[in-house]
Image 1: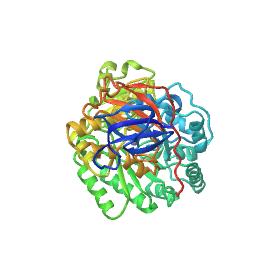
Image 2 (image 1 turned 90 degrees about the vertical axis):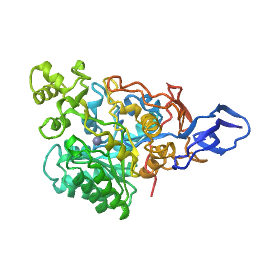
Image 3 (image 1 turned 180 degrees about the vertical axis):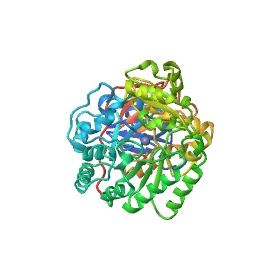
Image 4 (image 1 turned 120 degrees about the vertical axis):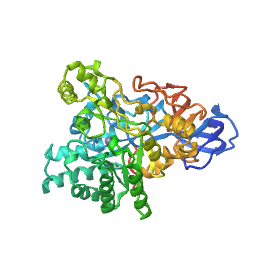
Length: 489
Ligand SMILES: [Zn+2]
């Protein structure tokens, strides 16, 4: 019996950050069987001469909680080389299901996800109706808080805190990888640092991390970083700064200091990482973005562009000032009118400085995460499907922010280690066969804000758990993904 697949003479980046070696890589079942010189027959021999073979990309920051069920082939991720998505970011988690859907339906208007019972039930759905990529899960503080106490701005009462802890305990038991917060969103923004310390402390010793969309990514960035570090230290768990950036012209350049705070914490022994998407525009729900229409934020109404608006699709792709001109009102009134018509409107926000993006990317604490919003029916931010190809093609190859080995590390081995994904993120015998074969001379993003669902080019083949899910830009329809429950510590 030979191996199922052998990639011959590939340029292998193993995910550790080490330089490439030329080797054969054999796949048997769902694992990598051998790396080196592989002799003998195989089910399928692939001449990989001149092509890079790397671990599958791990998208550590996604909002694919429900996309994994509603668009289960996950082609919009696989065609960009992603083999694992971490869901439950920014405080928006998967359970309790009905409450989770209240926050998640913004991205899936009119859809009905399956019923399931709690975090364990979510994993069971993944077991029974597997998606095309692997799914790791964070518990969302916003969802848990909404379940326990509605939208109350107050501090939780003791019974409400107990209810939140109980839900978080259930999440940990089911196998989540950590707790996320979204401290600009309802209802997460009402949480004090003390509330978050008390909840994060439930995770001490479990191997879970604390991932945070911080309270202020503008001029308050440094205070926000300090709050995240304080919570991580108090609970003695790793910190993951979500989509590290400085938002708004008045805050540009602050990333030098936020990175210095991270350096100081790491030098003192704290485990701190960040994730980043490779664009100068962000994307979120309009209801959370209207703050940028206030004077003095360093952004203009033309910087906010409607990405999805199910009730009024002709506004998609248009800026708030254009909508204001159409409605003959001022931009804040226009945003309010849009929200009346479609409360789930999402926007792209052109808010960042290119130098800051490169500075954050070059820093050793930063891994890659798309933060893509899976609004496939509309004009999602191009980061959704093109993030990894853009880092490899534009930032590594064209701009030289780092070399290919380091770029691959930041999207594979580093990410697997930080999130505790066992036997993922490495090309080595015995690891799961999550693999990407691509041409490092040509791989590049193709999506634009106007045409955001164009898939990247240069990616030849994508393998999840030993099964080919994408070949030459075409999804095979295979759905070999798994729910990745946290390994016992
Ligand atoms: Zn976020």
